[in-house]
Length: 162
Image 1 (cartoon, rainbow, N blue to C red):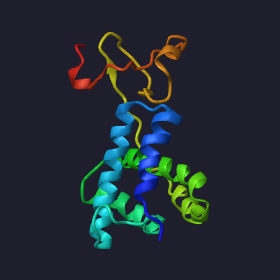
Image 2 (cartoon, rainbow, N blue to C red):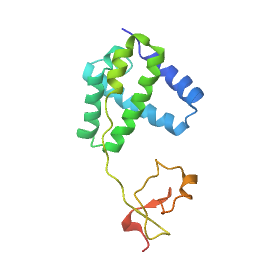
Image 3 (tube, rainbow, N blue to C red):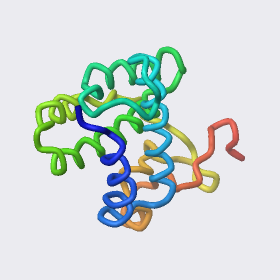
Image 4 (spheres, rainbow, N blue to C red):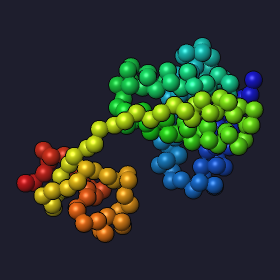
C-alpha cells in the first residue's frame, strides 16, 4: 500500500504552486475538495481522514463521493464538476509520479464531467447578452466579439435596473 500524504503534499507544495503557478484561491478550492473527499473516504473505509492509502482512492470511491456531493449534500452539478476537476488534476500529477498506479489513474480520469445548464443573465448596462461564458472567453477577448457577452459583473434578471 502506498501512503497518500507525500503525494498530496508534493501536489500542493510543488506541482500546483511552482509548476502550474495557480492562484491561492485555486489552491484553497482544491484543498477543500480533498478535505471533503478524505472525510467521505474516512467514513466509507472506516479509517482516520489522514489514513487512506493511494490504492483505496479508486474510481468507484470517487464516483460514490461525487454522488454523495449531489445527493446528500445537495451540491449542484457545477460544484461536483469543480471537485472532480481538482481530483483529476491530482491524478494527472500521479501519472508521472506513481507509474505503478497508471491503471487506477486511467479509471479515475475516465469519470466524466456532468453536463450543466447554460445560464442566461442580463448586464447592468446592456439590454441583451448572450449566454454567460465567463469561464470560456477571457475578458480581453470579449471586446473583439460582435455580440455583447456578460462581463464579470453579472446580475440576476430580478436585480437588473431595467
